[in-house]
Image (tube, rainbow, N blue to C red; front, side):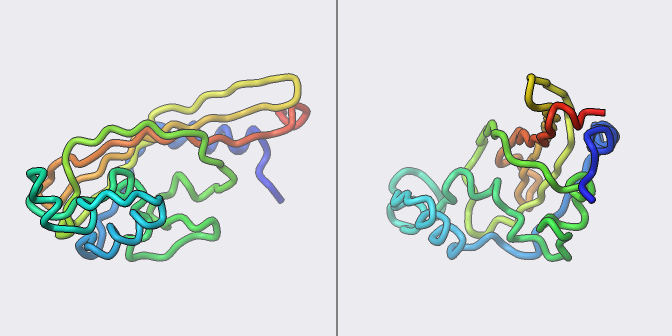
Amino acid sequence: MPASYQQVLRHLLATVGKETGYTAPEEIGRAAFRFYSMAVQDANPIYVNQAAAKAVGLRDVAAPPTLVCETHQLINEDMNEQGYPTSMAHDALGGLLRAGNSYEFFQPVHPDDVITVKSKVIKVSEKASRTNRLIFRDTEISYYNQHGQLLAKNIETMVARFPAEASS
């Protein structure tokens, strides 16, 4: 049975301020850069060609910017029924859809970087219309390399939608 509006709201409100995290079990690697740049159809040579990367002042090839923010594939643990890592307890409820992202990038991600992700729910809010009740969850996700240097931040907004009459 799907969770009710009030159950989802209570669950999400209880997650505000809680932090979860994980460290990838290995380096991010060149293959991830190549596959991701092909998937997003970005042929920038700095993602795959070391000479091109060095020509613009990088020490090695660099990841396409948002790759570091899509690092669930690097987790070495079980996933729940919704496809989320079991350590990310605030996603255990499921049923949320991505409603937007706000990215900040601080330095390039290189193939030898081992990524640590820290995730904290920073806000839960509601919005109602005549036909729907919406619950929004904003999560701040920070990405670090093996030296503890901040690589990127992502504020991810997720939404759960319920018919207006299901709000009780």
